[in-house]
Image: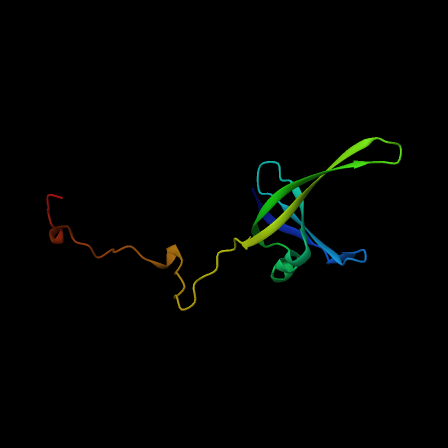
Length: 124
């Protein structure tokens, strides 16, 4: 599954417990009629994937949906869901190096020196 949108927030890497579990969260705002703010968590070595990204950047994140069951001290069973990212791609269009810039459309003037007698009556 994938989530696409612009990065709204990138959190700091958090470390939990004695085992060194790491987690880092990113919020992506979708670009649709009713934009959604989707929080995606990256865990362990995947937290480093967010180092090269900035707020406002358009991205596509490959995700897995995770679910877990927990029984509280009163014996009630609760269920929790999370969205875990495992890949993130930059969707920003960058001009290839060495390519000349494209001039604006209004930089071209129509040919006004065209004469009717110069017109060629080709059949195609």
